[in-house]
Image 1 (spheres, rainbow, N blue to C red):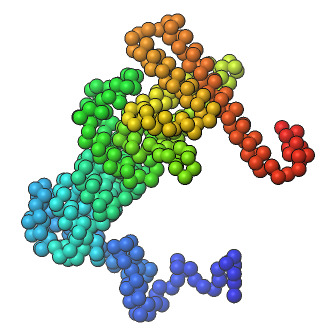
Image 2 (tube, one colour):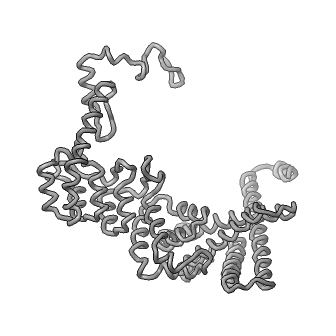
Image 3 (cartoon, rainbow, N blue to C red):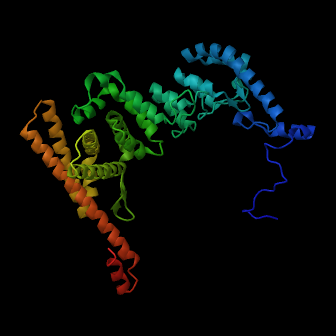
Length: 429
């Protein structure tokens, strides 16, 4: 008798080596009973699997060729009467076991047919007891929530969430851009809206972008994004990814739409403020800025000048703009009361870095304004020099803070050790 680390018994055939030709009718029958094509569980026997796959393709072909065209007029009018008529005639071709084909609910979402979608999600007699799965993936690789997000249908998004739709399912397949969440679909479609393209261009003042996004014309897009952002597991990561990849408009949309979720709250049990989403994003930006600034200084000292140095400087400018954006949105609402409580628990390093950040944001906005006005001279160069000095100071404060935290960790770890052992540790540095 082997243990968990023993190799498999060589005498026992693997599934690929199994002699399916020797199966009895009983084994074949049990294999068929155990399969569930609606959950993608197919028979093990190749002949049975091939037969069922062929039958499934025939059924789905009948749905696409016969049923789907007849359903579309019902979706266009959002007519339950017409949908019931189609279901009474063709419901046997509309799904497997307890679920309707995922394409049905996705098509309803594309037409924003709320009443039809509600009936499909509840299921019942018209569908022969079947119901729509709110997380069912269309054969092309997306879910109904992706479709609702693309259409900015607030009511459809709410309906899907009420019936258990997940905002954390990503697109998958050859026919779609893989790895997209419904949140990405909403944010990136909103960023391509003609209203933004007509009124804001890259390089414009960041405050103008925030003001444009707050206008009534953008309300529907922000409302849809806000609803989906409430259900997302990785909201802060998504904000940071947009900033990291220099997608400023997308980052602005998500920051504004999800600012309520990004804001933190007091941890009353410890009388401390827990880091909120804005703090985490700003911390990520600060670390990236410190790293880039040190790289730029190293390249300048080595006398390297060219595309690589310019690329690093452009990344710094993009991060500084993003830093100004995050600060603007963070201070836009509920800021006074929040920051009053927040600063109570900040240590000296945090307060110094906060003040450096505020000075950097101010200088960055002034620099952008001067560039827009066509001012290129000593005044602009002085601003750039001040920014470089502040970035160097920020990196210095960060390094000292990390060193202090590391030292404190060592002291706490060895606080019960004899003093000689503790001193011997410091001699190693």
